[in-house]
Length: 196
Image 1 (cartoon, helix red, strand yellow):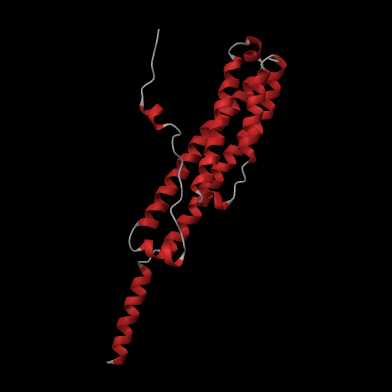
Image 2 (cartoon, rainbow, N blue to C red):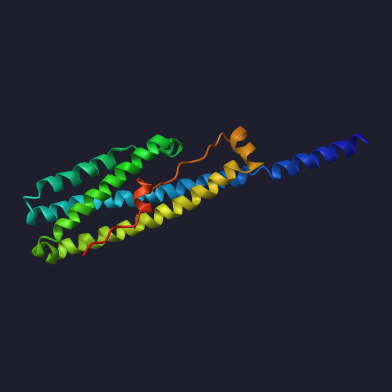
């Protein structure tokens, strides 16, 4: 009788551990970190391209000093944020990182717009190559962010769903991770005004 009780108790313990999601949570945590590393990698690739792009534009548009300095400052702000594992756990730090990257994207947009005013610059092979690399990098950033968003959504579901939420909270001390958001959702929801 005592043996059968121990066997039944052992069965329920093993069954309970099987459904606790410990390994699944660990795997999703690693997947999320790997996806984040790819996002950081693509942002770094963009940051590495910027000095060459600025130098090329400088030769043609020396009097566009404010725009060029704005790009350099935005790059410094974006690369000045320490990217640590804690960044993924701190929504305020994550938002600061996201704002710095958005500022850099905006500054790059102004820099590319300058090229429209300089036909010789647009024709320069070096500039066209750099612009193509930058466009490709922006696409890679979008793909990396999408993969990260998907991984965080999957991770956050596991952290919130029962019974894995108990494992996440009490055994692993895992919390939900912040995700990318649109800076101004109202502006995105509003259709653009078209004037002729």
